[in-house]
Amino acid sequence: MNSKNPKGRGRPARVVREQLARERRRKRTLWTSAAAAVLLVLAGLIGWGIYRSQQSGDFTPPAGANPDGTGVVLGSGPVPVDVYEDFICPICRTFEQQAGGTLDQLVAQGRVKVTYHPVAFLNRFSSTQYSTRSSAAAGCAAEGGKFREYVRALFDRQPPEGSAGLTDNELIDIGAGVGLGRDSFGNCVRANTFEPWTEHVTDAASRAGVTGTPTVLVAGKQVQASAEAITAAVAAAGR
Image 1 (tube, helix red, strand yellow):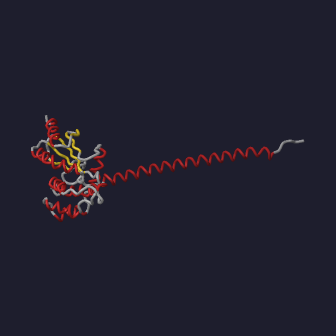
Image 2 (image 1 turned 135 degrees about the vertical axis):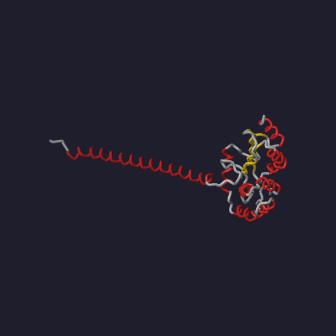
Image 3 (image 1 turned 60 degrees about the vertical axis):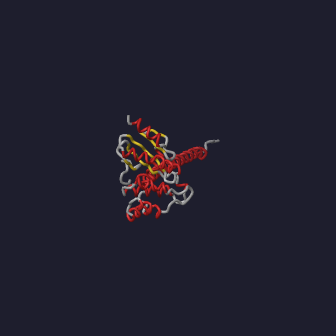
């Protein structure tokens, strides 16, 4: 009796072929999924790069800004001083009242070069993003050559935390009060011309490790935000 069965011999071969086909399909699926994941990652990185460029790359600094556009420079003395302020920060107002005159005097004496960084850390303490709006208005004042005068006036009329802050019209009135042209300055404020610059200044301050306001650096080293500490640090750096 012949025990050979051609159909029986063909069944194992067919099973093997089917297994190989399934393995090939599985590998194609894995490669397709991996390629899709890579494309998603690349798309995410490109999107993030575009977003960051829009956030801190597309800005125009006002007149008097430093080369990297992170602040407005006053004076040309040998000792660099960096001042980070937020216009709704009550402690910044106190600092301005106590030490602002000292900084102005040091600038007038030719001893320091002060870079003011008007940051917008405290938008959450107003209902209209006052930190950003006032900083952008200060940029308009710098463009008109009245940055320091405008900063002093802003702090004199500082709104309370938790309020809506000053209106654009009130910001414009302050500018006109310090000698800025109402029409040109008003157009700059209403158009939010320097809002992208404000975002850049704030982002750069965060990257530099500044976490609060006021923050004062003399020759690159943080000092107490007081007239006495600043004067002593400037004297030490100038030796």
